[in-house]
Length: 69
Image (cartoon, rainbow, N blue to C red; front, side, top):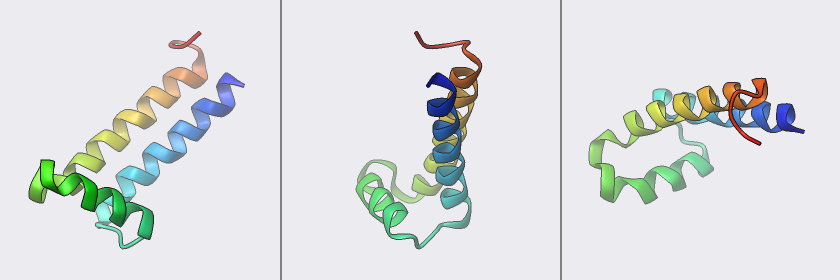
């Protein structure tokens, strides 16, 4: 089960990063970016690129069993 959750975290993190990189118009990303804009301002897309990579990296560690449990 830990591997499946790790892979899901990797996919979600990569989607967050891709959305930030392309400044996506996908409805879920737009809602997240609008909610984050008061705190991050114009750097909201950079925030999602970096945080998405961090989520993906944590997902790799989780899938390999390095963290968790």
